[in-house]
Image (cartoon, rainbow, N blue to C red; front, side, top):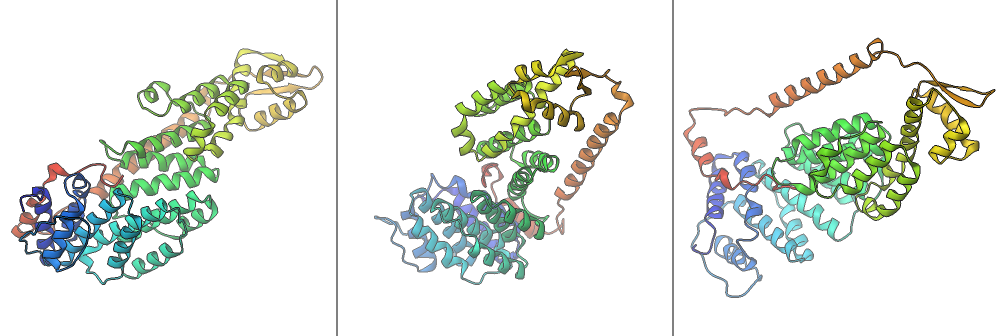
Length: 427
């Protein structure tokens, strides 16, 4: 036992007690410790544990040490299997990791071990993604099985895996239909909720529903851990920048410059704000590879119309009257297309102006007082909706013990070392 981390022994002891008390919360808490073990334990140690605990021969290394432990529950076996899968993936031994995962999933497990089963589904999806095998048929079957078993933990994980596979293969319509016909469990953990909100935001953005997409991305950023998960938060921030630009608003550059990896998107903000098509084309050409890697290139190309609208707004504010030929020159548009673009911008309410066809000029209207419009009421309603949603999420997140005087529940919770829990465990 000397070579085993004390936190791992504690986690295994907690799982052994969870098997007796049938408390799935202990299994969920123990999962959050897994990522800290990858650097503290090796495959040889795990093989020895399997041999002494479950009389199971596994050849993962040499000089295996024998430990005197008395773990016999299925939860401990599942936990060690998940840890072995993580270590095998780390060493790029995907075939062995897949075999272990499928072998464990074929077994019959108790409802107490549902959080552990969900984690196996997560790593199976990760293995398939590393193998570039993005066929969702197998995972759809797993999802049907989890629905029949009322396994909400696995349902949440499988929904996210299926949506991710659809998006990676550019099957946006299938992803949209799947998300609409399946209900995401409200009792899921924050990591899965954050992932689901991000995928929904991506789907809504690709289907031109920018307002709902922005709402999903805000929720994804809120559900992400405060410390860690930098890659996930960066992906959310990049997509949020594009959605805000497509909605016609300019994000604050000062708050973005503190983050690493968003410089190409800050350049986009600058080009859109100035309304310069030449500058936008230059930024798009220089950072095309980055946008493709982020899977945001199709959204970036849609910004050309926003750049034109921003340029028209600046011209509308600067000139009371300007010839259409000068507008075409300033925006870099074709002269024969400029009048149609201006007419569409006027119809969409982008600018307050009208076209004088006789003199071929764009003439601006007097700017009305904003308080005579419905804009203040609209913004107030958005703030009210945000506050109500925040309050409802807070109420849902509150948890109360079933019995405050239950000494056994208190003892099991004390076995978990909460200081070792990682905020970015599932990211």
